Each structure stands twice: as C-alpha cells, then as structure tokens.
Image 1: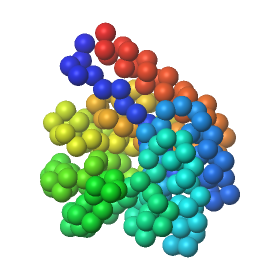
Image 2 (image 1 turned 30 degrees about the horizontal axis):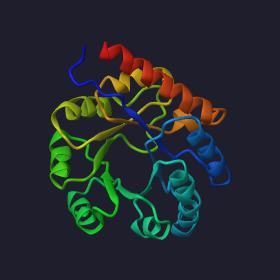
Image 3 (image 1 turned 180 degrees about the vertical axis):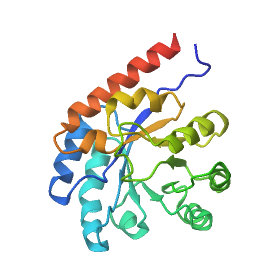
Length: 217
C-alpha cells in the first residue's frame, strides 16, 4: 500500500482543437466522465479569435461542473467570466502580480518553470497549482521525461497541487499517475484527429480508477 494514495483527476487542454470543432469535441469530452478543469489555450489565435473561443467554451465547461481556466489572457478570462487564469511564461514576477490581483476570486495557475529551483520560486508566490509540461508538447506517447521527473519530485513534498501534462497515448496514463500528481492534463490523447473524445475521457477515468484501487490495497 502507498501512503496517502492519490487518485488523480483529469484536466483537459484545448490546444489541438480548431475553432469549428472546439465546442462539439469539448462538449463530447465533458460528457465522457469526470473532468476537474479545462485549460483553454489561445494556441496561436489572435486576441479577437481567442475571445470568441473563450466565450464559447467557458460556459460549456462550467455547465458540466468543471473549472474553466483561460490561458495567458486576463482580459479574455474576465470577459468570458472564466474561473481562472493560467500563465505559461515561467515569469515569477508576473505570476506574483497575477496572484495578488486575481486571487481568491479566480484560480491562478502557471507553467514554464522547468527546474526545481524555478518551480520552488514559483511556489513561493502561492499559485493554486503548477503545471509541468508545455502546451503542444505532447506529441510522444508518454509525458516528457523532464516533466515526469519534476512532478515525481514535487508531488510528495509540496502542498500546492501539480498538473502533469500527459502524453498522446492513454496507455501511458498509469506512468503519469504514478508520479503522485494530483491532476493529469490531456490534450492529444483526447482531441487528436480520429479520437472519440467521450470514449477517451471514459477510458482515462477507468484507467485512473483501476490504478487507484490497486495502489490502495
């Protein structure tokens, strides 16, 4: 038995979604089972296009009972009435300003801190979570080895939760869960061309349920 075993929850990341399919695919994914939150990523869109996307997706996510978190655009987050803001820049000062300005009204999370020292510095600003991984960087089957190592180190020693960005293949989900990360982020594994998002979310939750049951014995 693992001491204080954790059953990670899913976080969906919208990076692979195009404008014309985003609502339908995300809606299907949310219907597939438990999702804690959704990170709505600009993914190269200009400000106006991203604003439209955020205003479409935020209410969809919230209606499903999950937290809608807008990435790197506080104005879009505010206008869309999102639950949170995620900063990807790895900038400690910007993170501190966002925490001061937006908490506790909004969730504030971050990524881009790729060493232990930088992650701990970010943690001192008291964000609601850190994410290990880069949006769009999940082309391999499993999580990036550096992200995996950071999550494995962080999760047992720091109270602030972490999200580990998983890989593109659900067969590697147990490897991500074994780090002890409280949340596993999935993008391509759910939204890649040809995937059934609802079936992928259902399958991911089955894997996590089985993993938690096994480590809790």
